[in-house]
Length: 248
Image (cartoon, rainbow, N blue to C red; front, side):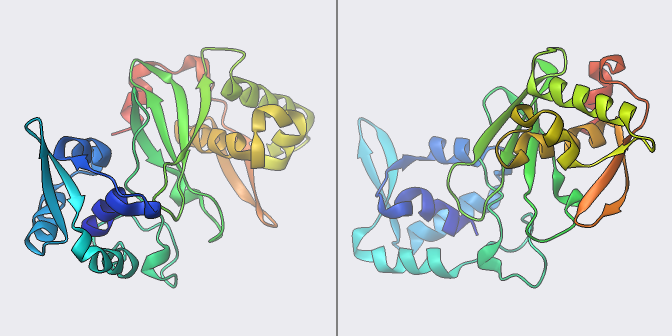
C-alpha cells in the first residue's frame, strides 16, 4: 500500500514530481509508520525510484526506465493490511477509500463517522477540532481517489454566527415544534439550507459531531433517513477537557 501511495505522489495524474524524504513524511502525517520506510527502500532496491541531488538536498524521483513498472504497481497494488477500510467487504480493494490524508494545519484528528453509515453509498467524513480552540471543527470528505480532500469548515460553537451554531439552533427550533421531538437531516436542511451546505455536507458533519458529544441520540430509521432527538445536553455547558476526553 505504501509503495502505491509513494508512487502516486511522484507520478500521480501524469505529473512527474520530485519529493524529499521530509516532504513524504510530512504528507503521511499521523499515518506514518515503519512500513513507509520499507516501501521507499523496496522501491529504491528495485530501481523503480532513484535519488537526485541538488544543493545537498536529495529528492526521490521515478526512474524513467522503470516507468511502466511503476504504473503497474499503482494500478495493481490495492490498499490492504492494517489500513482503514471504508467500504463493505464485498467491494474490491482497489475501491477502498484513501486513508492517507493531509491533515488541516492547526487541527487535531478526532474521529471518522464510519460507524454512522447505514448504506454503502453514504459519505464518510473525517472530523478534526482546532488545536487551541476545541470548540472549532472542520471535516474532510473521504474519497476513493488519492487527490487532496475537500476541507469543510464548520466554525466554532462559541460563535453564534458559525455554521455549526446555526445548525444547532435549527435542531432546537425543529424539536420544539414537533410533538415527538425528533428530526432528520432533511428537517435541518429545510430550516437552514445555507448552513446545511452543498449536498447537506455541513449538516451531516454537524450531526456526527453532536452525536459524538452526546447532544443528540439516534432513535430509529425512517426509510433511508436516521431519526434523532436531543439528549438535553447543551454545547455551551461542555468544557474543553470534556471534549478532549472524547478524543481518547
